[in-house]
Amino acid sequence: MAFTPHLGVPYWPTNVSDVLGTSMAAYSDKGEGAVARRLFQRSWSGWNLTALLGSAVFSMALVDGYGSALAQPGPPATLAGQPVDACSALSRMRIEAVHIVSATHQMAGARLEGARLPNPNGSVGSGAPVAGLPAFCRVVGSIAPEFGSDIGFEVWLPADKWDGRFYGVGLGGFAGSIDYITLGLALKAGQASAATDTGHRGSPMDSAWAKGHPERVRDYGWRAVHLTTVAAKKLVAAYYARGPSHSYFVGCSGGGRQGLMEASRFPDDYDGILAGAPAANFTNLAMSMTNAIQAQLPAGAAIRTSQARLLQDEVVRQCDTIDGQADGLVADPRLCHFDTSKLACGTSKSDQCFSPVQLSALKRIYAGPRDASGHVVARGFLPSGSEVGSPTPQLGWEGYLLTPPGREPRNESLAGGLLGDLVQEPFATTASFDFSKHPAQLKGALAQDLDAQPDLGRFFKRGGKLILWHGWADAAIPPEATIDYFEALKRNGGAQAKKSSRLFMVSGVQHCMGGTGPASFGQLNAPQNGENAENSMVAALQSWVEGGPAPETLVARRGFGGVMGMPISKPEQQRRLCAYPAKEVLRAGADPDKATSYDCQPAQARPSRSQ
Image 1 (cartoon, rainbow, N blue to C red):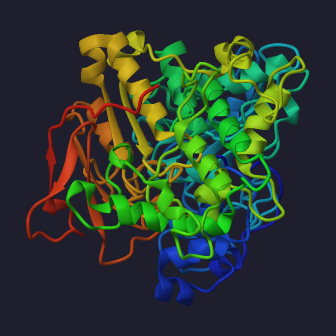
Image 2 (tube, rainbow, N blue to C red; image 1 turned 30 degrees about the vertical axis):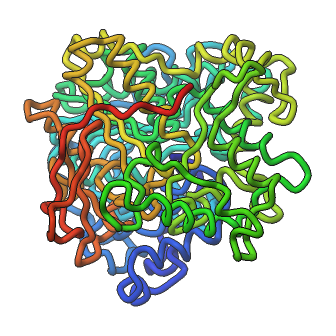
């Protein structure tokens, strides 16, 4: 996911409702989904959904008593832990290729100079300023490994009660900003943390920075996160007079890819990595997106966003009970032998029925791109039963695979940007891409810098641990691509890879969050109050690295409660997640909304659809 830039100065608004665009009463009465819908429905900006959610709940998540006003910082707190001059001394540190712009002790509750959240329309750097944080040392810097590079980064160091951990923050889309929300949640958890803009400033959908600048592609692809991590650890050691006891990297989407690049290229950087819905093979992803675009180019072939509901309802009708449970979730879409003809006009009585050319487009989206001989070039998307974006269209088929009225689909911005800007020489467009001729050229141009290789032998050998996860309803990145990566990882790494990695596939969950499934399981940020290794994937990773058992199961919740620090609604609708390929099975007569009602039953990895 992608987040926010470091611009702006004014203070935090006087009331949480200034950010939400609604009242706390509405929040309490209608639940977190209603608030998220209100916020999200005002934005189609790109892969910065977590930032928008975070801007809505930032004050709730980062200070106790989330309904309180945050306009003015309270009286100066008594300094505890590290002295102020220990922070300012960091500005004089000398690190190769690094320029420390500032090292400032931030008093508890004070607003941060030059730090803003995105506004509700998704505009970078124009939302509410950041405040309400515990006291910490804020280091702002830049790194220039070669001419043309300008990697911005920030390191946040708790002034008191540091737990000894270091937390690296992943960034999605085309990045371009500092993620203050996740930095703040790590700070609240007592963890030192670092984030980078990956070498450019702008929207996560903007790729213009790359054209003519191959050095920036290298920075974005793999170098910025590594160099930020190296610099951050030196700052941590200087500030606390000791380095971190354990280091973790957490990201989703492009951030998941960053974590895998770290593990493969720089295995000493992190002890544990959580890679959610990773764009691991970015060049393949661009081809999956391009295929969906081309499928809808013929006259009348474009699937309307208003047809997503009929598609979802029909998938659920046909495939909900393949796991023996009627719960509105398709447990494993690979087992859904979806009969698209039931959507056809004449068969379906809906005014949103599909024409023959639209059905052909849908089948091509499912099948994935193929060359002239019929060989599958990259993965297609799945009939998941959670096609409608929830709580916002951005998260579903309407946001990624279909064309919203009057707007460009995001897969065009992402795939088109990669083909048109990250590839330095004149190249094919999404419309002209030839799946027989261009895949090899695309990989020759970008695979070395963008694609994570499924060989983590050095990472596992030194004791590194990896958790992968993916939502079965992801309309941005094909879920089967992560299974492919996981299986290749085990083939390449043998027993050590099997011992040191886990994969969780989550029914009904869309891109990094949202959907009809259990989309809240502590997967996006450092553990907050009430989160532990049983209900937080990040906490489970940290426990595993630090001597606990490998995570074989997790408790997840439906809805947005708990995501990025959002308050949890009661009663919870829980599900149990099982490490792949095991599957969760509801015990006869048990309450389906309690995780304790499910058992994880061993299963052989189900064969993926043919490639």
